[in-house]
Image (cartoon, rainbow, N blue to C red):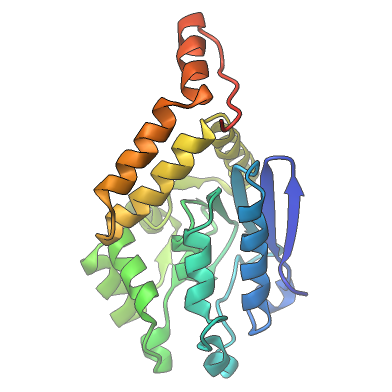
Length: 249
């Protein structure tokens, strides 16, 4: 079954649904995932996107027997992952189990990565004879650092949950039974933030990490918030010691 999209008010869910195949991704899934992201981007009221999967494993990556079909321009694996990184909503990957191969890059493209003690990962590209694509290499280096990227790509070492948290692959680590609550709490926190500010800062933090940021573009975002109704609401709520109600205006 292809990945599905569900929208519940201001939260969207993309679910990988091939549990018997460890949620392995196929060529037809790539444009489908990109369409889901495009739909989320069109809904400006969506504040959080949660990437999740069914079964024991989170995702075993792309079908290596069909790897050539993941490189076509316009629907390549790297372009799909970039779409996740550039999604307007804040993204959370909920990792209940193993994440392998290209799926590790998909997870790194998400803003937050919540794992349980059952989560583990490895990147077997070198063992398979595959040179990873440029965007993925860059994402590994900017997210995890050069030494960790070399360790994972060049040795194909497995990492367990605790070390995934230590090296920065996971942003949150919890017990398996607490995974859903941890994701929900994080999602609820993000939903209370001012949409204009959080979307702008997410975008520009990612660009800063890659060395591609534009100071003038950041200043324009600053000016936009200075003239927003949300800033006035935030200041008033702070003064009145209450939770602000942001509208994205």
